[in-house]
Image (cartoon, rainbow, N blue to C red; front, side):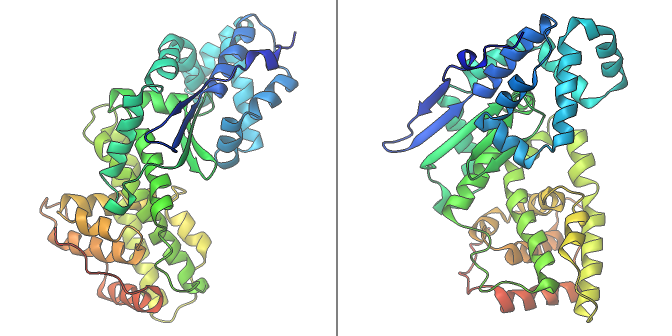
Length: 369
């Protein structure tokens, strides 16, 4: 029997006003709808196509799926929901969880810890102090001119997946991902995505470029720009995770250990192009980051700059991806932790400076650390 869906979606939006005229909206409709769906599944009532499409049509899910999941992933997620929550499939659920099939592991976690997740969305994320902590952590790695309250901030939570995305329409956090950060430092995941919103609202990391780049430079500038955007934001959460026993190994495996090889390969690519080789396509640079959209090597670059005392200059040029690369080289040469971060070659550094003269607007002198 289909769930009477329209009656099960009361408006659960909380408005915070940091100061007059600023809308801070937190929307958990998609999470509430998820719990209603699972109540029916627990009664062995299948998830109908109508109910599923209504669920996906919620704003949080529309934003999230547009940037995270394709149709195939959504179909597999829907199937996993039925297996995890419907008693008739319990043997299959146990087998899938034991085998480590990720959607089943994730959904089984939501099922087992449902009371804690409900408290998180009904109390924690609705606390004014929690919202303020997001701004506090984001400001730490933003230039002073970006220390503003977003005039129209929309935060959404959904029970789809284990990721977060910052888009023009708002920021969407998966319930699983957001809750997992509570054991590390509450609010730092939200701060990461808020960082993107505030950086984009105050300044754009492409405005310093005077004209569009041709194919030969487009890919390199893309990689530097995304490394700057994600690297700065990663300091809000991944830097903290590095010190957490539960997360440090994973962060090192995904974003620290592979970074030197990525930097060396980037350096080799630049040297070939500087010598007159063929233009390197944008697709190559996307693959070079292992599909991380800039987290790799961005976090490694930004963290090297931070720990060697150049945070202030990095923030001074938060809209300048070329300056970011040049500053990394300076920090890597100075590195006082004896971890020998890789250096760009003389040829690559010369090429960066050529790009700087070719595309960048005149910039003010950076502050001394």
